[in-house]
Length: 251
Image (cartoon, rainbow, N blue to C red; front, side, top):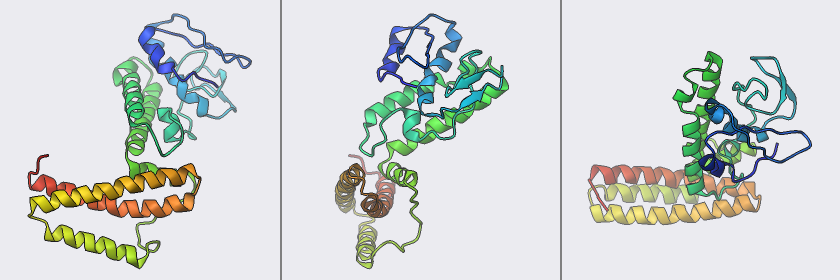
């Protein structure tokens, strides 16, 4: 099912709307309907990624195709299991994401999935809305974070990075050990901590750009290798942030 990219902008121009699709048409028709349906109808945007197999509505037993909401009785259906986080937030499946766009779409989805909108709905709809809301939150937190986003993209390619050090060479491990020793030596030195934070951020930014390039070139093995390194530097970053907080460093 096709949805126009400027769909979210339509919300600001129409208080209520109804979406009517046919299998032969990709045109979007706008009709006025009960305001209570606005949240359900707009979430049909996500359904373009679900299965094309006919499904039956749990409420009215109507056979529908790939919608989060039954096209007959308009009740919320169980969210499709094959949605990716990129599908949920409705952004291209790429590592080099637009953070502002993610934040904007997340806020829109938060409004649409607010519990108040389902307060008068059935228990089943409430349950499904909670599931979808949880998925939206997971998608947002994952896609917003460079390391989590990269690891998730590896998972989509069937790769999971283990917690061990089997895939890390000795030279790199030595480099990380030295960096941790530097942090220990600078634990009470504000200027040194600031310097280490700056250095680590430079390394992380470089890794982020290289990971983006690797995914763009579909070099999954290279992306995996870079993300293993990023895991270590992200851990260092968290440690430095804690030290910065403990020392009351304000910039």
